[in-house]
Amino acid sequence: MAVTNNLQGSGLSGSHASDLPKQAVNVSDSMQMENNFISLMVAQIKYQDPTKPVDSTEFLNQFSAMSQVKSMENLATLAKNNLVLTDNLQTLTAAGLVGQQVSVAVESLELSGQPVSGGFDLSHASPRTALLLTDSNGTQTRIELGAQSAGKVPFVIDPAKHGLRDGQYSVSIESENGEFPRVEVAGQVSNVRVSAEGPVLQVKGVGSVPFYNILEFAQADAGLLGG
Image 1: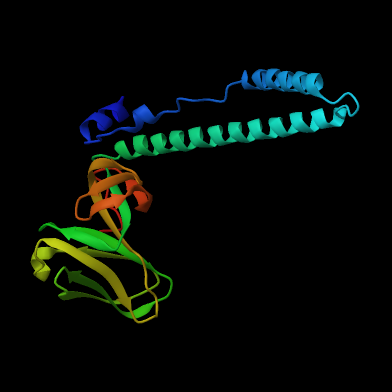
Image 2: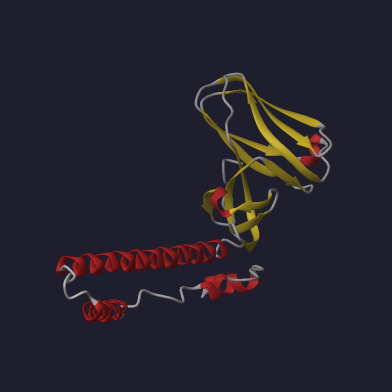
């Protein structure tokens, strides 16, 4: 029931409910194919050249070929139905995340005055690390994080403290150990939108995020990434 409520309240327009598998493999297809084969065989026998009768093995080859074609069609139908079911399950899962905290991999942030918590992983210690934010005009803001040991490195971006205006910023990590770690950001899911590429989550402090970019799930009041 909770999932149903989220589907109705999360702005999921164009639900995939209507895309549920409408066609399954028909078990009577095999009988129909046999009937067609018998009709074809009778016609071939009826109109064959009496001086050159059709070899019985030819009928077996024809039946085998028809069976292979039908099996391939059935497999294609099953594969299509499985894809639709997987897509629907993914949408239902995404809808259940509304109001929850998630950690996502990002290359950009959508700042709106509120602090944003995040982090990244270092495989090796770095004597100097920094968080680089670049706005739409190309202006770069550098947030020094100092020396960091290997492991999880948390950070908090406070727009007021760093003089960052509301807007979209690209984000990356600069380190002196040669690594280019992935940036992870924690935020609350406000709604979910269904697109041709799959569910897209609207995460506070991040913006639109594809479902496959989610790295971690948590309760709404839980802190992520040590932020």
